[in-house]
Structure formats: structure tokens, C-alpha cells
Length: 553
Image 1: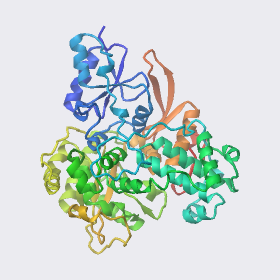
Image 2 (image 1 turned 90 degrees about the vertical axis):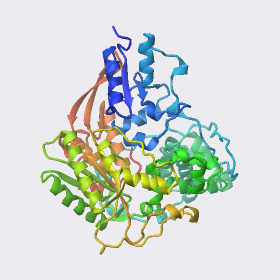
Image 3 (image 1 turned 30 degrees about the vertical axis):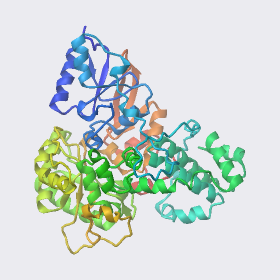
Image 4 (image 1 turned 90 degrees about the horizontal axis):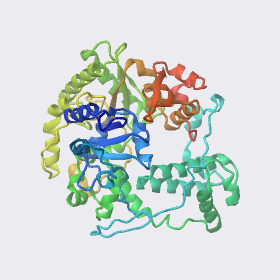
């Protein structure tokens, strides 16, 4: 019996690289089981390439671009308090010692790093390098949140959703409370605390629907999604007209937001730069050059373009060009617009598409189709920059990436990826038709010191385009997942959970009992038919245009 017998291992971010496949063989030959799902008994093994000497994740953009599992798995890992997490090289050490090394010193805490900055501390020092801890705060009422399930009759129509949100808040009897909670939600989003941000967002949504003035803490507690700590804050606002610390934190929030508006820069990196005293990308580059992965540099280059909204007409022009290229590569394959475009909104943040081929579940074949398309679109001048890639695409884009690194004053050495099968491709693309001009839109601009990297063009914007590959058998669940919106998808997932099922972009599954290793058996109920999935969940088919709901999770 091998030393890994009875244990499940999840290898992240991907099993594709040859070196990772070697570890898969080692684990399996020593009795272990390599899985593609996660539960509290699973051992998470991180590719050593993505772990620094302090045990923190590095090259985060590459890490997430290579992520090959369900996105919910990452959320589950992050939410877990007791994840067994090790570097992949730990496997070799266990085999060398002929036993499972469960020493705390060998485990990683990379997923729960504590490099935080208190957003209420307005630190303007240019030289500060001290970590400012967030500190403990009272609970944010996650447990008190209730799920409001929409009946089909209660789902809003597009006309109602089109109302101006600002006007609705101004005319609301609790406008002051709503604005304060919006600010708190934004504050914690910028901290990277998505759970706390969501709790404030849900509370303000419930208060917006309450319809009458809230008079005290007790009344606030009677409202869905408002728990003890939020109710106490509401009482303070009712008594004093303000919440201490909110206004003072605004300067730092603006600095964080400036950085986080850049593609590839999350809350962790933005906070780090602020701690280092950086106020521009130029100064952040000098203080922490290792953070400027090539995807971040492209985010800097097209900062202003990617903040601008994309009209429906322009989305359609991008799709028409991509379809033209696809027909040259494979006449049977199809590509459709998803996301906010499919939901009927007037504009989009980026252009989301799903590519599939009737009858084809072979991801390698779909990957080859996409790779050929990418080569043609880059050679035509449509693709301006990649935002993820595999080994084959590295050869196409290596010169562009190295030129961009050199422009920023960084080592032009480009780290090649070994990811083989392409599951999606995210890139910046600009329409070739010079007769089309992007609408003029006021967007946040780069600071003058950062302008030297800009490649934005207000007349002909570069747009972010996402092409997701989809198995034919999973078309329905994929279209649900990537049409959204988030609250609509969460409402469906909640219904699935209540039935003992699981819904993700691969399908609707029945979750069986755990085996002796704590692994639950998953059986597909439906994945192809979008309408059938909703029917099974007790929801009459909701057209994409009616999925712009708020607050139902």
C-alpha cells in the first residue's frame, strides 16, 4: 500500500505541464487519487513555479490564466479555513522519506496571506514600507443573509432595469443609508474582501426595496440581509448623520481604484503599491518591478481604452469579423456573443463570446481551431495583445511581449508557458474598419507620469475580447453561466443546492454521498439544454433579456 493511499490531491493551477504530469504519476503510483474537484479532505498542491520564497503566490496573472478547473473551486479553496496546501515538490520529499509529511512547517499559507493595508489609514508617506493590518472587525452578517428567490412573475423586465439608478437612490427615503452602505461595499471591494463587500451590497439592495424610512436599529434588523453589525452602523448614521472614517478613507480609495482600474491589478497588488508609497504606475514599477507581468503592462498600455464602455453595434462588428475568420478555419464551428450583450444591455464592459462546434466535445480540436483563428487575427492586425496563452501561442506573441517589456524598462526575457490545450483566449482587439469611430466617452485617464506607456486611441478603441471554448454537450450550462447576470446565476445555484444538486458551467449534477475518502460522486442530470436546466430547477425559462436581476441569490 502506497504512502498516498486514501488521499485525494488537486494540482493547481493545471495538470497540463509535463512536470505536473510527472507528479500525477508519482501520486498515482503511490496509491493517491488525483481529482479535479475540492472538498475539505482534499490536499491542494501548487506548482512550485507560482510560489515565492515566503510561501506566497507569485505570477498571479499567469496562475489564473492557466487555471483549468471550475471557477467555484478557487472560491471554495479561498473560503476554507483548513485547506491542506503544499508545493508539488512536497510529493517528492514525502516519497524520499517514505511517509506523509504533515509538519506545519511544510504546509503553505499562500492562499491566506496577511499583507493588508487598512483603508481607513490615510498613509501619504512616499517611503513607507510597513504593512498596515486590517485588524479584526465585527461580523458582517454573512450568516444573517437570506436568499430571496424570484418567482418568474417577479423577474424585472428590461425597461425597469433601464431606470437611472442614481435617481432611484436620490428619491429613496433611505438615500443616506444606501449611499453609506454603497461606500462601505466599495471600501471592502478595494481591500479585496469580497465577502464583506457583498454583505454591504446585499444590505443596501434590501434597504432600497424597503420603501419607507428606517427609524432605528431594531427596525433595520427586521430587513432581509441586515444583521447586527450593519444595523449598529445604521443606528450611528441615523444619530449623527455620518459614519466615522468613511470620508477620511476616500483619498486612499482613489489611489487604490486608480491602480485597480488596470487589467491584471487586483486588490492585493494595489494595496502593496500604496504601502510602498507609489501613486503612479511609474513609481510602482520602480518600487516593485516583479509585479509587472506582461499582462499588467498591456493593461497599462490600454488603460483608457479598456475603461470605456462598448456599444452593442461595436460588439456586433467585432463578432462579424471573428465569424468571418472562423468560417475560413472551420465551416461547421459557431461563435456567439454572451454576457451583457446577450442580456440586451445597451453597452458592455468587454466582448464575451462562446465558441463551439455541433457534435464536438473534443477540447483539443476546439483548441486547434482557436489557435488557427488567433494566428490569422494577429497577422491581420486585429489582435493587438494577448492576455493569456499556451505554448503554441507563445511563439506568435513573444516579440510583441518582449518589446513591451523593453519599453517599460524591464528585462525582456519572457517566461514561456507549457500549458497545452487552450480553453479560452482573452485578448485586446481593434476593428480593422477605419470608417467606424468609437463614441467619445469620458473615462478615467492615466496620470501624466504614466502616459509614456499608453497605446489607447479614443477614436478607435482597443477592446477586450474573451473567446471561451465550449463542449457541444455542455452548451446549455455554459450559455447560462456566461450570460449572467451574477445574481441570476446565484439564484439558480441556490435552487440546485437546495435540491442536493450542483450547477456550474459544465452542467447540472446530482451530488451523491461521500465515499470513504470524503469525495462526493457527481452524476450529470443535464448540461446541453438551457431551458431544461431551468425547468429542472423549478424556473420557467427566463429569456436572457430578463436576467438583469438584482439581489436574488
